Amino acid sequence: MRQLLVITLLIMACCASPIRAEGLGQARVEAIVDLYKWDVESTPKGWLLFLDVFHGDKHADMKDLNNYLTITSAIDRGPKLSAFISFQVSNKSERKHGIKGVFAYSMKTASGFRIKIDDTSQFFLPFERCADSCVARTIHGKAKGTSAVELDLLQQFLSHDHLFISYRVGKEERRVGVPLFDFKSKYSAL
Picture 1 (cartoon, rainbow, N blue to C red):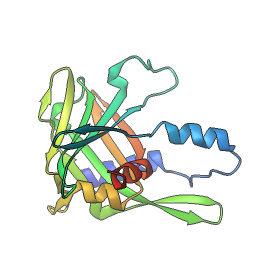
Picture 2: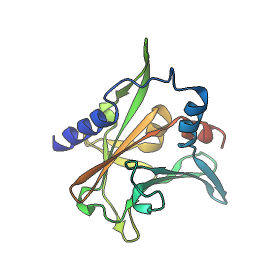
Picture 3: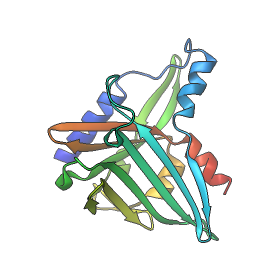
């Protein structure tokens, strides 16, 4: 129940109002979209799709790796299944709290878009190590959902529009929202 409350608060903080693209200007919308471009690296066994997301307030140091979330998805050649998905965050993270996440859809409204959370997609991953950074990783993309159902995170990435992640650094709950449109595009081109 506590985990559900944390995820609900995460969503409220990230998505309190509808997302509106009108009036932003095409150049600004494209600049925002470019922040969430996934890189693809081909390997003999498959592909690595990875994304570094800077998060923090306007005073945060962009050179400080503690202000980044790195997501890596390893995809096997052939059936294009997940070998692993990892989430890498600050080495100052609270190890016992791990990574919490939830997926969401974009819903068109008369005034723009609204984000609709998929409550069945909530998951938790413990940190497997915290050295230079803290890393939470799924093997074959499987994660324990909050309803004790195993989730295939790769399928969640492909069937949703957004991913919201939270983790704890000291007493601060850090929250990061990641649009998944470019991930789906890069995956389909593999």
